[in-house]
Image (cartoon, rainbow, N blue to C red; front, side):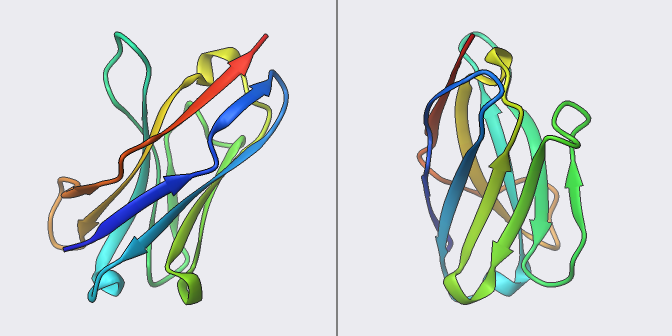
Length: 119
């Protein structure tokens, strides 16, 4: 089991930045991939970025590539999502998720944190 707790959401003006944090706990974190997703009202959940606990590779959706950066701090068991150049269309609930490396679907989810970008 993996437990995830997000924080760092809030209200920001367009063009601003926010950093989301996801504190993870579990005995086998090194065998998981961590991802960030978002979901706006009336829209489907959208994948944003993913990173493994080991190695350096990260993956991004085209919608956020170049503006968002996923990173991790293994010592703190925390994954971050640095969001720059925010736009009103980035307004959504943001969720941290984890999956075992050997499966395709994300298995564990945090409760989410709201990000609102004003124009």
